[in-house]
Image 1 (cartoon, helix red, strand yellow):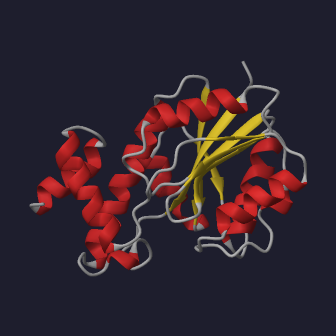
Image 2: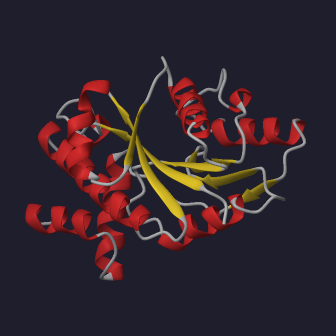
Length: 221
């Protein structure tokens, strides 16, 4: 079995610094608490994966103690870089330098993402024929990217937070002749419309991420 790291890209859940596009309808304190619940659910999910070495790539650096409490037993890697592209590339570099043969970086904004998607990504990136695994987000980005070796050019000068992220990444993957595998698309939670979609989906499915579900129950819907 390939030694593979699965790292959650995470921010310290501080009021006014996370999920601010959800305010309103949430207050900044509620948005930070919801994001903390997202993290707890994602940490539990990663902990369920077979063959994964769990990690968190966190920011800011002074937030380490928060993640030591939230994710005991996870490797902690501080994010470094001036933009998301640099932080992703540097996180890959750091984890590969620690001896992992494959690395998955996943977001923390998809609380209802099926665990099977992550397991499938882990199984795919562990096979020699796959160089890159991508999990597309419905907004044009991606919720997961996996690599078997560093490729910084996949992250440089990308128009982050736009619908061009995934198409441009795919173009670069193909231009380099890398073999890619794709997961099903999923939605992340960034806007009030996404928040309502999340609430409605939790009501329909009757299960799912327990920490996120509890947030809505405590808030009264």
